[in-house]
Structures are given as structure tokens and as C-alpha cells.
Length: 317
Image 1 (spheres, one colour):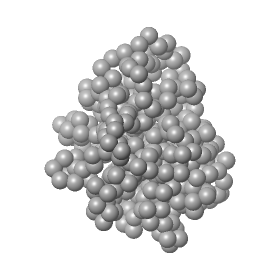
Image 2 (cartoon, one colour; image 1 turned 135 degrees about the vertical axis):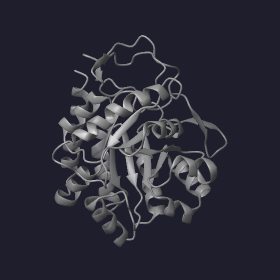
Image 3 (cartoon, rainbow, N blue to C red; image 1 turned 180 degrees about the horizontal axis):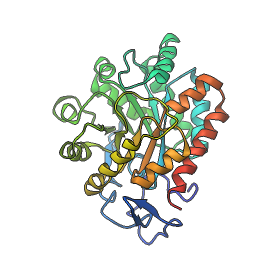
Image 4 (cartoon, rainbow, N blue to C red; image 1 turned 90 degrees about the vertical axis):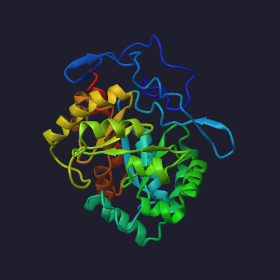
């Protein structure tokens, strides 16, 4: 157990009788007791997937956001394998709940200038999907209990083949995958992932009916894009992002699905406001990549992660 959190690995059963955190959480203006025994998440906490050896496994992603947490993004093998692993170690040491690992792609349509720069550098150094899959396997060996979710685009998966992509990442120890340009219908009707928990995205343009559909389809958690446009760290939290979180929260509650919000988050007070508004997690990528590009210092990356984790935890006080 770390800082009062339960490991995001397999559990024997739904929680019962656990003490609340001091102050509880604030959602939509009303207090909720942390760890409350309620329909939310309990139906998903023990989902199993067939592993590569014919057995069942409970993914670490299920239950990873039972407590509000930080989803931290890095570009795989950037700037190189050794330093990538050092940055990931720093994030885990700082208390992140999920590691999101980008598989470099030459046309990252959802990513802003910062991540595009890192992706371009990685590609120029020869980083390819098999390299990132290998790096994920190393991460899994180093951090057995931290959920790992690769993120990429469908073009990459088409080239590899969906079944092969699914199998190789599962064998490497990944728990889920984000295909930023694949809607649930495509995954359901033709080219989805069977072994990995596929995390789907919702945006400010997603109406409530569509949001309910996407929320039902996602596995692990729902990724809410907090702003129109591409990724990128911002100094101020856009009020429209908070309004979006307040709109998503009751729909996600109804579906029993946790959600994390990203795009534009760079500071601890941003994270605190989003969790107070109802988010179960906060996704941060560009701010970490900025630190890597500017300072190349794992300690700086870890310090930023600690600030963000502290902001999330402050929301429950």
C-alpha cells in the first residue's frame, strides 16, 4: 500500500468498511465519502482478460482510479531507453497512478508542439513500435503493480496487425491501450482489442447521449479531452474544462466508470480544481515532456509529479 492507496492489481473483493480519507471528496458541490461502497466501479473492479498463456488475469488498470490519481504521459524511449526509464522511475516514485507511454507516430494529430517535438526526436533516433514494446516490458519488470497504457494511432496498429499488437503488448505487461483516433464503433465492429483494456476518448464536442455511449464502451477509465485543439501545457486552467468535468461526472457515475481529464494541465492547483469538480484522475503529458526537453533532469520530472499528486490529494481535504 502506498500513501493509503490500494495497489491497482488484483483484489479479493469489493471494499467494505474502509475508513474515509480526511474530509472526503467534493463532487459537483456535494461531499462524498472516499471509498464509499456504491455501484460505481464495483462492477468493473474484477474484470478478467485472457492472458497470452491461456489463463485469466485481472488487469491493473481496473480500479487504478478508485482513488483520484495522476495519469502521467511520456514518449516511449525518448530521449533514449536509459533516460526514458529514469523518467518513468521518477514518476512512479512520485506516486502516479497510471503510466501512459506514447508510441511515436509521424502524424500525431492530437498532440501539440511539445509532444510533437519529442516524437520527432524519437523517430529521428530510430525509435519504432517494437522498441517501445520492449521498453514497456522493462517498465513492467521494474514496476510490477503500476498500470501501463500505451497510446498511439490506428495507422500504427494497422501496420502491425490488431491481433499481433494486442498480443505483443499484453505479453510485455501492458494493461490497456489508447488509440487516439479510433471511436468505439470501429473497435466494436471491426478492429478492436481483445486482451488490452481499450480506453476511449470524449471531447467538449461530445453530447450527453454520445458521452453515455462512449462511457459504456471504454474499459479501465474514460479519457476526457478537456479542451478543443491539441495537447499542451497551459499556465491557467480554462473554466470551460471545469464545466466539462461537471457535465461528465454524473454521466460517468451512472455508468460506473471513472474518468480522467487531460490537455492543458500543468500545475498542482489545476489538478486540485479538476478533482474537486468531479474528475477521478488527471492526465498530464506536455508539462512532463517540457521538463525533459528543457532540463533533462529526472528529479525535475519527479518534483512536478509530486506537485500534481499533492494537488489531487488536497482535493480530498
